[in-house]
Amino acid sequence: MISWYKNRVCLNVLANSLVNAKEVYNAAEGFVLVGLLSSNYSSVQEAVESVKEYQGMCHQAISIGLGGGNPNQWKMVSDISTQVQPAHINQVFSAVGYTRAKNPDAFINALVSPAEEVGMVNISVGPLSKDMPKAIIPIETAIAMVKEMGGNSIKFFPMNGLKSLDSYQAVAKACADMDFGLEPTGGIDLENFEQILRIAVDAGVPKIIPHVYSSIMGPDKSTNIKDVSKLMEIIIRVLGS
Image (cartoon, rainbow, N blue to C red):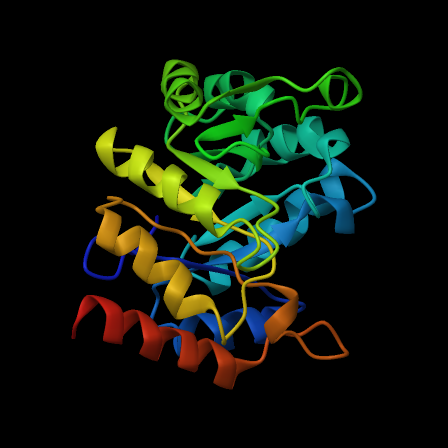
C-alpha cells in the first residue's frame, strides 16, 4: 500500500538493512516507498525471502527496482513481484504489460529516457531494443501506450539532475494533462529536489514519486535519515501542511 502526502507525493529511497528501512519509513512519516533492487540478489528466491522481511518492517511499502535502470533485470523484477505482490514496481517500457498481468494491484511505472527534442522520449529501453535504432515518440503517445499496458506512471530516467529540465517540464505537463503519474529519477539531491518537485506539483501531476538515491546515501550504502527528514520538510513546504 502506498501512502501519499496530500494524496499526491510519495518518496522513493533505498535502504541497506531492515533497521535502515524502518528508520527511513518513520522519518518520512510513512509517505515513502523503500526501494529494493533486484540486482542486489543472486536469485529470485533469495530476493523473495528478503523482500517479505522488509514488507513486514515497512507496512508493505516496498518498491521492487531494476538497479540503475538495467533492462536485463526486467524478468527478475517481474518474477520477484509475482511472488511478493509489492506496492510498487519499476519496469522497462516494453515489460509493463507482462508485469501487470501478474500483479493486478501494484503501482507500476514505465521507464522512458529523455530525447534531444523537448516533448519526445525514448521508449527503446528494453534488453533488446536498447541496442536498436532509438524509438523516439511524443510523450503523450508514450503515456497512452503505458495506459494501454496497465501502467500507472512514467519513470523519467536518467534526468541527471537539472540537465533535462526542459524535457522534464514537458513530460510533467503531459502527465498532468493526461491524468498520469510521474516519477522523476536520476541525479536528484537536496539542492535540486524542491525545484524538481515543484515543477510537477505546479503542472498538476496527480501522483508524483521522486526517486532520491545515492545523493543521500553514506559510504555503507545506508540512507541518511536526517536527509529523509529534510526531503519531507521540502514536500510539506511545497504542498502545505
